Image (tube, rainbow, N blue to C red):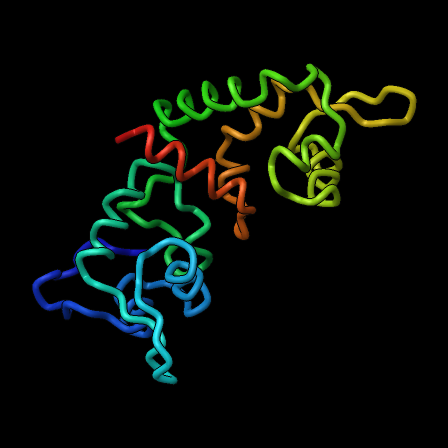
Length: 184
């Protein structure tokens, strides 16, 4: 994603999906995911122009998300060094996330099973198992069962690695939304 150098005066008040992905330099797939999940838009049944994105909504979205979380999942190979995107979670946001998660997980035991982590994060048990096998999330083995420390889970959920998951779960999106609202 590259939004530096956009002449907003020349951008029309209403954009189509095609105009959006060309404007911010992302793939069609990423642009569609943005309008379906993130950017407010009007969906209509006009064939090639299914989405109408208001320029003001786009500017507000880009302004709100810069400095809230990394947005690394929005670009893949298109722009290796985006200048305006934050490439890691700011410390203030990381602290808010950690505090929020600590309060939300207060009722859980100190050692969590894979199914508990799956329920908390919204990702499947297979995904959580892959995090464990790949060494992304530390665990302890007790009688051939894997247990994750609640502290380790909170720490992992506040990392750039967790934030960079391309297809975020509903709970992950809710966490981002809550943290954004806490900022305002």
